[in-house]
Image (cartoon, rainbow, N blue to C red; front, side, top):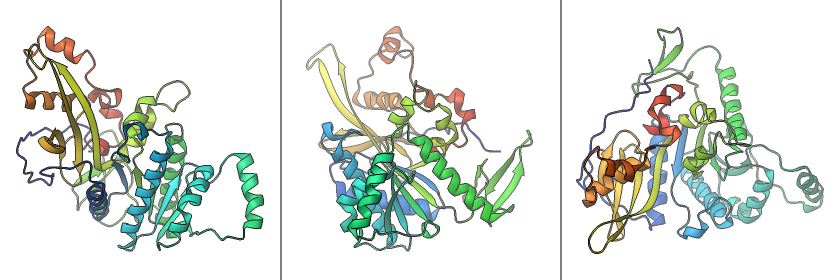
Length: 369
C-alpha cells in the first residue's frame, strides 16, 4: 500500500551529479532558470504528473520579493506566460490563472496585448468573480469598450498555471481543482485508466498502482486530467499561516498541498555564525534545490555560483540544509548531542508540516519526494 515513510538519504560532495543534478548553478541567470524550469515541467508531463510546483525567486531585488509587491506579482505572470508559450510548442493549451477577476483584469490590461500574439496561451481566474462593485463597473464598461477578450472553452485546456494565490485563497484553489477532478471522474465512469491497477489495503481502503512509474496512490487515477502547475506561490510561507486564526486549517496541507510535486525548486537562505577567532563572524549563503527528475540538493554559494554539496531522494528541511552547509564549511564545532549543540539548534528542528509523526495524515508524499 502507499507508504508515508521518508526515503533514506545519500550525501555526495562531488560537483558532478549522475542522478541528474547540476554541477554548478548561477541563480542570477534568469534565462537559464526559466529554461531549466520549462524542461522540468515537460519531463513531469512526460511522466504523467498532473500536479506540479515551481518555486524560484521571481525578482532579484530582495525588497521586491513580497506577495504584496506589484513587481513580484507581474514577474510571476510573465513567467507563467513564458511557460505557457513553451508548452504551446508541444501542442498543449495553457490557461494562466489569477486568484480572482480583479487580479485577472489588472493582468489582462498589462499583458493582454502581448497574450493576443501567442496561440495556445490564455488567462483567467480561479474564482471567476471579483468584488461586486468592480464586476458591475466592468460589465458596464464592456458594453462600450467593443474589445473582444481572448477566450477559450475550458474543455480544451489541458494545463493551468496558477500564480499569486494567497493563503486564504488556497481554499478557492482547492475547490477549483476538486471540481476539475470530479468532472473528469464523472466523464471516466467507474473504471481506471490503462496502465493502472487497483488493490485494497489491509484496512479495506482502495489504492492504485501505476505500472509504468511503479508508484502507488490513494487517489483514483483519472485519464486526461488537466495538469495544475503552481507558479512561485511560496508554499512554505503559506503553509506557515495554515491553522492560524482567520486562515484555513492545517488539513489543507495534508489533503491538498501535499499532492503537488516540486519539479523546479530553489529556496535561498543567508546565514551567519559567530566563532571564537578572527573574523569572528562567518557569513554564508546556500539553497535547497531540485530539478526534476534529479534529486533534492543542498547548494553552497561559491564565487557567485552555487555548487552542490549533498543530495538525496527526500526533501531537506531548512534546518537539515543548514547543518549540511555548516559541516561542509567546518563550522560544526559542537560535540554531537552536547548542550552547546542543543542551544544552537534549538528545541524545534522542523516545521509542523515537516514533522514525520504527521506523515500518515498526508494524502500524498509528492511534496517531499
